Amino acid sequence: MKRKFLFLLILAVIAVGVSSFIIGTSFAKWECPVCQLSGKEISITPMINRQYSETAISAVDSAESSIDIAMYQMKFYDSNNSVRQLLDAISDAASRGVKVRVILEQGEWQGKVTDLTNENKKTASRLEDMGMEVKFDSMKTTTHDKIMIIDSKIVIIGSHNWAYSAFESNNEASVMIKNREIASYYENYFDNLWGQF
Image (tube, rainbow, N blue to C red; front, side, top):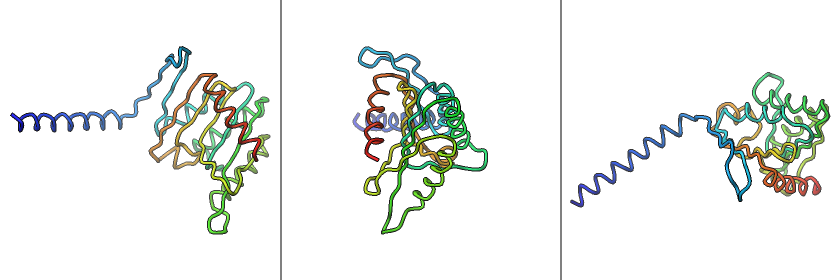
């Protein structure tokens, strides 16, 4: 009896694992168009792997007044790839009068400026040329954020750095949240960082 139970338990665990793997690797786009959070409406859109850029570009295209970004790594590419398309969408938003502020990571390792810092500085120069305000964090603090706040009502947050590998080959998980209360929370966080640098 115990062996039969143990066998069924093991079989069930294997079945759950296989089905989780199948579901997890299909990466179907899921959206919660209207969920509830503390009795208030909230829209949640998970973004797995390659889903990020399309969703982020659509959100940026809807921007009317502000886009605030805190990003650990942001690479500017001359070639037309998904990262460049997102940066072009943000540039277009800036051109139509949307205020864009960006905070990027900078740091040193063993007394030398990191390659990441050098890449971020190149990107900052290009962003400033496109009319965006850019600041760097303190050399003493790592800003490991990957967050964008649009019009104080949309938050995109998760693991995606803005680099080709994150957009096109890595396993990454992020989420877009449409809710003014949550956006306000992250906007206050961003404003606090902006004031420090």
